[in-house]
Image 1 (cartoon, one colour):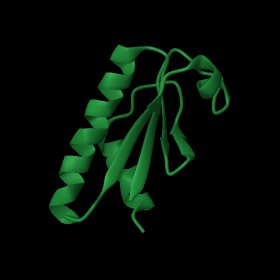
Image 2 (tube, rainbow, N blue to C red):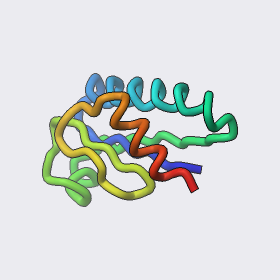
Image 3 (cartoon, rainbow, N blue to C red):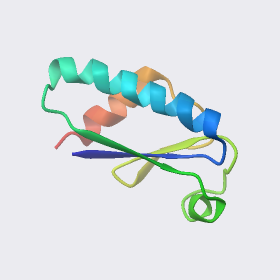
Length: 87
């Protein structure tokens, strides 16, 4: 099980990153049909500040490792990060 955490104060930005993660998951499940990914969102400022100082733009963590800070990741990037996290 891979845990993906999306950090952003704003809902539209979390949604956009979530869609990218879901597209990457869909792509990877062709190769890894048993791949399980849990997506969670952190939206409270205090909780985001514990991980990064970037509050408005989205950030992304995979298995508690911060992989993207303050920008929208591309699907190919997310695919690479998820592949690295596959046990």
